[in-house]
Image 1 (cartoon, one colour):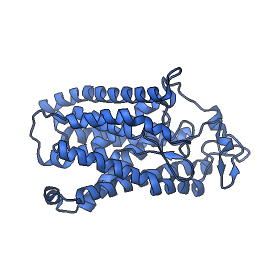
Image 2: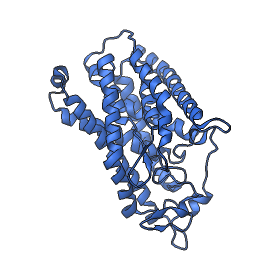
Image 3: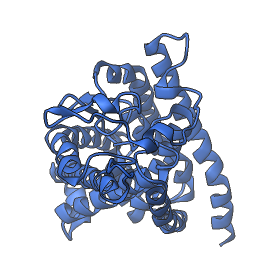
Image 4: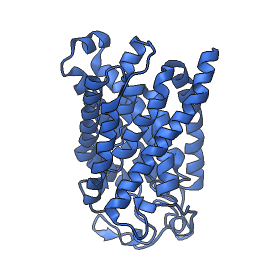
Amino acid sequence: MHIPENYLSPVSCAVMGAAMIPVWVHAVKKTNAELPKEKLPLLGAGAAFSFLAMMFNVPLVGGTTGHAVGGTLIALLFGPNAACIAVSVALLLQAVIFGDGGVLAFGANCFNMAFVLPYVGYAVYRLVMGKNRENTLQAGGIRPYAAAAIGAYVGLAAAALCCAVEFGVQPMLFKDAAGNALYCPYDLSIAIPAMMIPHLLVAGFVEAAFTVAVFALVRKTAPDLTYDRMLADTSAGKKKYIPVFALIAALIAACPLGLLATGTAWGEWGADEIAEIVTDGKALGYTPNGLETGWSLDVPMPDYALEGMNETLAYILSAIIGVALLLILFKLISIPMKGRRKAS
């Protein structure tokens, strides 16, 4: 679901980036207001869950690959506004360090995965839980987990649909003199089913399973680290979250499993291979000019690899670097937020 560089026109990228600015401003204000100050650094752990989830590629229908995002999960732990910030920062690191998702397409990727996914996912979770959400949570049972699974599934599907539309409008709006697409060459009739069928049949269930598994562990071992509990109980006090960080360590160790899925995610082919991609029984036959001549950034570890290093070790190193940077960044971000809250 990561839109690569030059699949969207510069105009499209600018529009999507501009659309995210008020979302980010709102998310930062709300997070600073509603998240207990001692929980702010822990948002890095939420971002780490998202970063790691996106490294576990799974095979999808049609020979492509996909992954979970964890947007609804973070919304359940810290709220949808904090989830927007966490996923955005994770996507930024992926783009500038690992080349996973375009820098110019950063706004579009954030719109899909950091805005639509967590807000829709959390809204569906609240809807399924019903008006007496607090009583249901206290009573226990499977309803919170069913609601989390449904929210995660619907949230990912909504994000995939937005991504498909962004892909699909490109050949309608941007063509060269010969009538060939300048950027993404697949219109809505191809992009929507190509994105939605694999996500509805496979990726959505992966997102739901990941969300429920982590949500269940957190509710059992660190129940105060959930958004519903934070809203009900704002009591301060340092607590230990060893199981949460142990899970992050386990995910880092297991992340090479994501290398087992072969193939490229739909819509993420390189300019050197897109002409040969077969759709509806025939190859595209040309390389869109915008893809061939567009801007790209030389990143330190493209595709989570490092020249001269074993692929598995490089993948683990990428996970360690990504998680460490996220934990450090959110620790630093929390410092001025704490200061403002104390002064208020």
